[in-house]
Length: 316
Image (cartoon, rainbow, N blue to C red; front, side, top):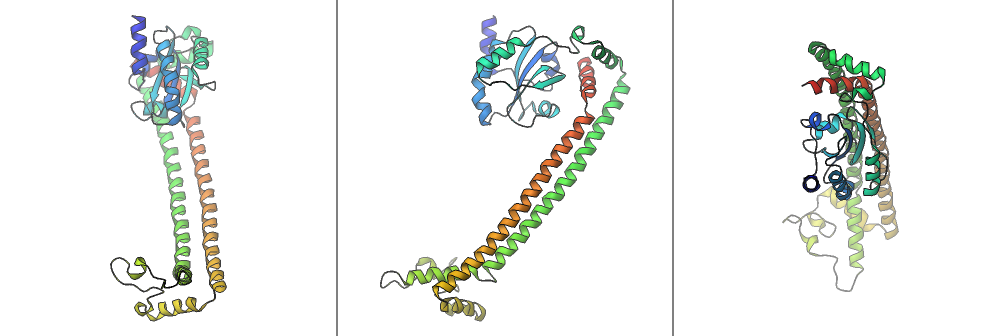
């Protein structure tokens, strides 16, 4: 029977969800992999982790399982602050720690075998007096007091998330404004300053210097989008302003034209450089906003908050 169960779990894996959490983790020391199935490191770990789940399928005090952060386990991943995949945690279901050991089967198995029953709401006899007192306090808490405390904390978290979202949106708008400025500069250089026409004339000059008999034209020179258009070798189709620009560039020396092209390309490069530097600053501000938000939420959802939630959920 043990062998059969282990084989079944090896094939399907034990996957925890918010709904199965209390039932599956009750009285257990957990060793959990929070994952995204498509992520490369998760795929690489899967064979060894599945083997580990099978090995501990019938263990009395240690639970080894998966939590899919992209599916039914998303709520669990958010509640424990998973930020990357895979994230491996262990210990009491109400107070897990990050696993930092090796990820090969031998390392995982050695670590899992060393796990012992820990202080938990289902194992109060293993707790220090202070923790035991807290568990008892929350067990005696009325539903009204619990909901009031929980709602207050949840409202505070929502307020932090709202404030952070507003600031992030401001940075997003600022980033789009920076892009508009950069794009306008590029458009000005290509159009008003004539970079595109300069490059077209340079290409035409190079073709005309090609093999004898080549008139500097190809199929794309003749028409654009099914209609004849103003081009360096079709000045008769140009208006007065466009013709004047083309004639200016056609009359320039190769060195003079190259210098103008280089100058305008440098303007574009500088615009790109300034844009990328400013965007990098905005990205750093966004990262700091995220870290600040997480720290504030962690302060609100302190260990006592998580313990209270776990105690009351266990009663449901």
